[in-house]
Length: 312
Image 1 (cartoon, rainbow, N blue to C red):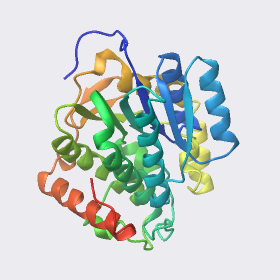
Image 2 (image 1 turned 180 degrees about the horizontal axis):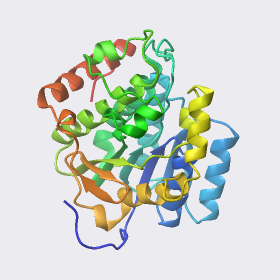
Image 3 (image 1 turned 45 degrees about the vertical axis):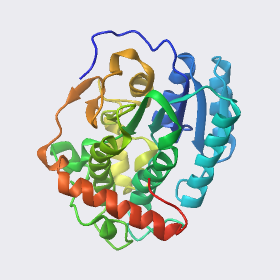
């Protein structure tokens, strides 16, 4: 699935990344800046976005900050429009990659986005589907979409220890509905949705845009789990100090490489990479019927939020 070359891309062009301000996103952003890409940083307005933009500029990158609250689909649509305007004006180089990094993990599935959808599903999945759909015609081939996935869609010993349940799939319309539920299950469902979406997106994207999924490795103690019970957070912080466990500092450059390095230029079809190794997903994560249904349901959910919009 990949070439044998380990050289960096000679022309990284412009890379858009969501959630660039903290942890994995920040370290990915800085690694991209060192690779010579123009950067479009899509995240919440504020000092954190300003700070990471400044740090990227200090590494020589041309950077544009695009304020966006991914829990508001209207914000996402406005961000996509801002990107299209920058590209049309020639302010940035051609769009070559989009890194869908932003994510939340709410322990309370009653929490809703501004559009009334379960918050974790809305931010981790729906917002990125909206953004990518609005920009699908704006990429210049060869281009890449890299989605941040997770192995949490299936259980193992460590996930059970940390009370992270495996995905329990349902119709996407149901997954998007806020309701009392099991702590963490919405996160696992959203990550399974990302795998299904990656496969279906490749079918719609054509040959000029390669779609892949990056798993940064288990990073206990990051802000992603800040809504978890205190005891679980304490275990996560302790395990985060174990040698060899993934950290944002280690995994950020690996994600940046997926977006621009020649090594990954041929990766497509929703291929799943765990840190540096392409691996086969569990059979539950490949289901053509679920993938088709997710695409159709996504269109329905996005059009409910904005009846004038089309997907993709």
